[in-house]
Amino acid sequence: MRKKGRVVAKTHAPAPPRLRLLIASSEVVPYSKTGGLADMVAALAKSMARRGHRVGIVTPLYSGIREKNPGLQRLDYFMRLPLGDAFVEAEILTLEPEPNLTVYFVGEPSMYERPGIYGDKAGDYPDNAQRFSFFSKAVAHLARYLPWRPELIHIHDWQTGLVPLFLRHQREREGWADCPPSLLTIHNLAYQGVFPALAFPFTNLPPEDFSPAGAEFNGFLNCLKTAVLLSDGLTTVSPRYAREITTPEFGCGLDPILRHRAALLTGILNGVDYDDWKTERNEHLPASYSARALAGKAACKAALQARMKLPVAPNIPLFGTVTRLADQKGMDIQLGALEEMVAANLQFVLLGSGSTELEREYQRLALRHPTKVAVRIGYDDALAHQIEAGIDFFVMPSRFEPCGLNQMYSLRYGSIPIVRVTGGLDDSVVDIADDRLEADGIKFRELSPRALAKAIRKALALYNVAALMRRYRTNGMRADFSWARTAAEYENVYRKLITERSTTGLQ
Ligand code: ADP
Ligand code: GLC
Image (tube, rainbow, N blue to C red):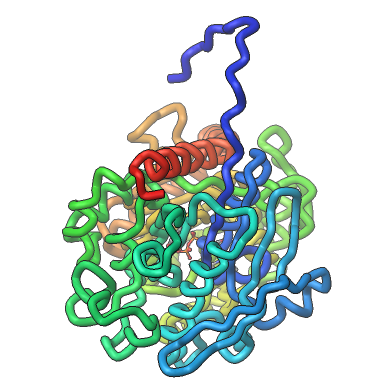
């Protein structure tokens, strides 16, 4: 419960010093995206810059970025770094999308300017170990070069996992005495960047760094493990996932190390960038609406039904999902539940891409039930907004979910999320069993088609009670996941790490 603050007159505490932060990520909206990581990093950086901090983002220069951003400037710093037996040269291009924020793109066309970010239909690119070893090395070198001297390096997921090892090397062997501390945010423990030991030489680090105290794990190079062990601080993207990953069930083999470092680990729920995810004056939506004026939502539903070639029927409950078709998302469970429920009076739309087998299964379901199920395979940002706005219920039966952004987007769009009780889904959705008056979604526990079908039946019952439906919708639309709270929590973590580093004598 929020306490009323006492007003302390006339004493003005000095403003806390402005922080200098370098954020490294393999994806950043609007330049690149395969999932929520890109949204989160962009919104974090923007919020920190708007709080007055000096922020840099480092990210690879992928295909198309050069063409779409004619304002790119070339930094007067040419990188030439060893990568195994070779030397690789990269240029650094910069952009200033807003005050206090600079994006540094690492340009190396043969590695990054490809059709995909991590791979193509044939699978992951075979040289991802080189691509992301080089990127992590570039992050450490850029951090050392930048004249504004970043005082903390915030890395995200396995693609930047080797950064703390490079920093340690720089500090202990290359004379960078005041090297800044690093913070790792884990967005997904299931992707660790595991490569055969033969990939270690691409780091150009001494062989003793390929050890349990360094980059080795069970005989392999493991990028995420390296950062879990060596970064100075650890966060993940929801409080529940922070607890889950210290258990064998969710720890993906890294739980012993995470338990060992649990005191350093904080779960901070992601925020939503309401500048992008909004129901009013949204260029992607055919009509505006709000919690007080919901009429526009009906127009969005009709437009979506028409676009997806379903019967335009205001009174048929419309369910939907926007997702990567990956094991994590429980889309196999959802197929089973839909088979069971498709005879009911409902419609379902799906936008997704990923596993070829799931893509085919969903397309087959749509072919068999053309008036009830519509499927679009691919990646389409505008359609994602239109689905969030046009549906009545958003289905998210994830096996595990570090945070999940779609359920929070759904809440803001007045679409009721149906979620499994796991990770950030549990932290962000209120079921009627959690709070009768504040309920804004439907939760289920068991990972089975039967349990999801039961939750869908609950949704159908709810749909028939207009007053209750309206209460759920407005509760959801008023829930506040804005970045102000998330950014304040990150700022606390940043300050703590920076202060610790300056007082431990490492500088
Ligand atoms: P994850 O990062 O695990 O995929 P999140 O819920 O955190 O899950 O974020 C997914 C993000 O990616 C959301 O912004 C969602 O709208 C978007 N997204 C996922 N699949 C698609 C798609 N096929 N087309 C458009 N956007 C998509
Ligand atoms: C990952 C997770 C997702 C989270 C996103 C942003 O992709 O799978 O749950 O919302 O990162 O943190």
